[in-house]
Length: 230
Image (cartoon, rainbow, N blue to C red; front, side, top):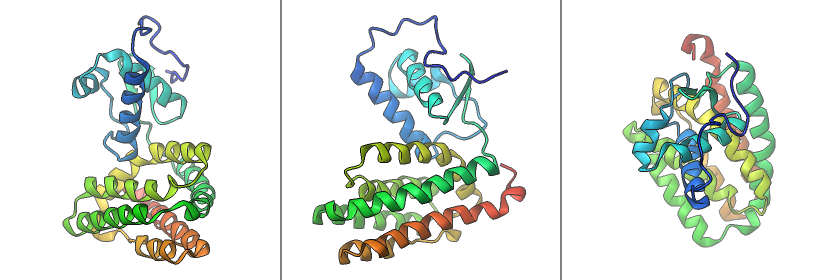
């Protein structure tokens, strides 16, 4: 059955009375769950279950899923068949290529706007990453890693590029959560200290190199694609 990607795959619902603020809150919550791998690929997504967790009706959840489907992060086959699509090597390589283009560019643009307070928050995120790696806590690692990168990229005055990066993270987050879960945190490489040193030194080239190396380490996990069979 063909996936539904239209703006309204739930035509029988009347959602005009849902406040815009609630729509955005649910949408951003679901994006965050995907980015941090809290929704697994290839597993059905229950709109009722998500609505209960969030304390909302099913309509804003369906509305958010429709928007996310348009971004390619979920497939809506019917009202009761919604899931994160399984990753393919071709799709993953395209995502990585786009990350290699966008994230170094945004990092360079962000550097002049990173304040001492943001540096402090970046260091805190890196410390949380270290704790997650030491403790083997994949979920905490995903959360802190996203925060680390968001603090850097978020300083850039490039809202369109930032949204594109978030969309890419939303698409590979569920998959990478599974990969990290199988590999364990002991096999993850932390390029973040080099990034912090570059930020403190005001060295844009070094920051770009650190971000690029971090993306490369992520892509290297694909070497065992056939064995993982994800």
